[in-house]
Length: 300
Image (cartoon, rainbow, N blue to C red; front, side):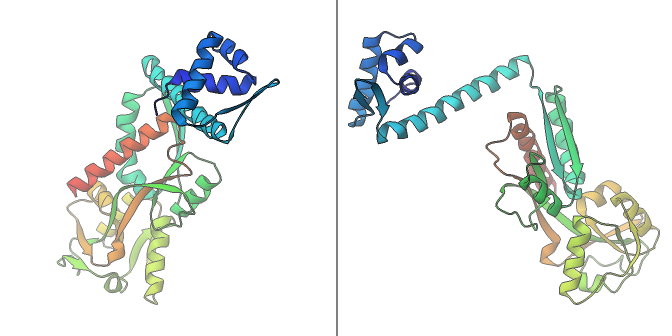
């Protein structure tokens, strides 16, 4: 079965006009040529595509199926043409995305640096929210896509994996735990904590403590990874942060311990109502975020 775009566009025009002659006219095609193309399509399929009468033509069941596919294909071709032409004049547009804290620390900044250098005509509106808030916002159509931890209820959204958000324990270099290479979260709960005031990581740790029948004894709660690292270094307490955050904000005064619990490796994903339905510039940004996730995995 070999139909070209002219065949498909002709068939759409004929159905829309209700007659072969009118459809041929819209396509600037001779009636004889249009009739031959329609007959050739029917011969190839071995079934009638149009029901003909004095009043004109209407599609048969097979014709309606072909019409559906023809419209899909021609729309995709027009979208492809428009997207490729946009590269000639410079990609322009706006992206509204959301990210949890881990995504903003580990993946998004590096991806934005590369993406915006390549596409200076694209503006990006980005908000930091918890993974649960992002899922709700994406489902409500309030943003195009989001970067979240896969522990959130995805509620039927489409996802693509980005990488692993590894959580580690941190303590002051001179502290009693500093000589340890790894530790379980249950052991860590016996220590005073320095943590975040809210967000997905805070909620995640609270759930894990509750499963152990415990609560986290916070001495101080702060709003940034950097601030948590500084107070842990000062000996105020222990903490749990993404490994990438420790690599960025830690100093020689901070000791890092591997968390032995399986849940300490959280998978980051990008989520959207329909990934294929996103704008081209949104899809390109997601591709770059995914590349950064792959780079992080390779260097971990």
